Image (cartoon, rainbow, N blue to C red):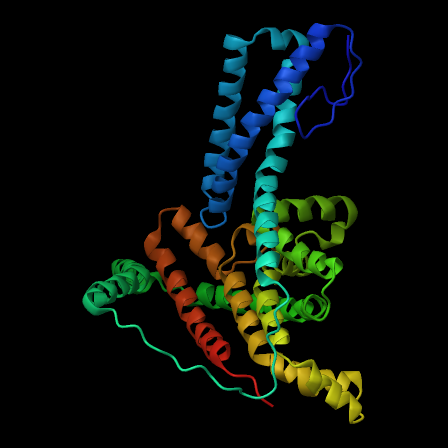
Amino acid sequence: MYFASLNCPTLDCPTLFALATDETTQALLIYTILHGLAFVVFGLIGALVMAGAERYPMLIFGLVILFTAFEVFFFGGIVIVASWVLDEVAGWTIFVGNILAAGSMLAGVLVLLCLVLLVAEALARGRARFSRIGAGAPRAANPIRLGRTTIAAETALIALTVLALGVPGWTIVRWLWIGGTKVWVLDDIATALGQTIGLATVAAALTTVLAFPVAWVAVRSSGVLARVVEGANYVTSSLPGIVTALALVTVTIHAARPLYQSVALIVFAYVLLFIPRALVNVRAGLAQVPPGLEEASRSLGSSPAATFLRVTLRLTAPAAAAGASLVFVAVATELTATLLLAPTGTNTLSMRFWSLSSELDYAAAAPYALVLVVLAIPVTLVLFRQSTKVAAL
């Protein structure tokens, strides 16, 4: 006989057992290997479905169907090919183990891919310096003539613009025309707009502020610890929003019940999800600040705080504004974590759009889509201006 902590001999569920026969050992080892390989394939497919659920929450049902089909296929395969495994491993423990392993496997695939990209980015970045004092001597740009491919290139760009802007624009206008004036419920739209702007503004400001110390460590330190501190933020953000939201729900219910479904919790979730969008911009801005200017300021008697406000922050402001703009747009359109963590009564633009479109009332959802597009226009202009602005004293 044998015993197990969960009777679940999967690769990610540690099993403690006492062996009595060689047949038991062989059954457990073969099942573990096959089960692990099956979960790798299932994890890759499930990770894609879960990532798509960020934008289309209805795919959650597809994930449930996928998991059910996987279970049926796996149990059917065992019954047909290796029924002797069920004699050694209890069937219900396999099912429980699969449920526990599925969540970690789906998120683990995304984390693994993120780690691979982080290592590749660290190797490609090297130790190059990006800061200098003065404008320098710009290299003359030599345009490359496209020749016979000019028409094809311009046609491709025009087609891309039409598909990216024309198709959604035409769809929104069409449903607004079908719905008429009755779909414009101004009180509901104003409430959703106010809540969206409030949450997005607070989250963008807090995320950008918290990105500064992480970017400072990443730029001014070159050790392993600095890379780990920076990379940890990307790993957290690589998880699907539903995984982060469910984790926060579990923690708050068991350890901090007053924070459950509070504004503080949803803003904290936004910070975890979108801090890389601010971090990459702030880091790029800090990397272009010459340390010599800060040293000159300190040598002239300025305190570290005054040096940061007058020199560092001023030179980094364009990059920080670009990062805040990206976070603002991301928060305004975020749905999954907002549905799970937002306080009762919260109705952002994306929540109202999802609610109405899930009811197939596309005409009523069209005004919220239009307001989201209009809301993104000034933020996009700020992003464009600040991203092309040259930092100067």
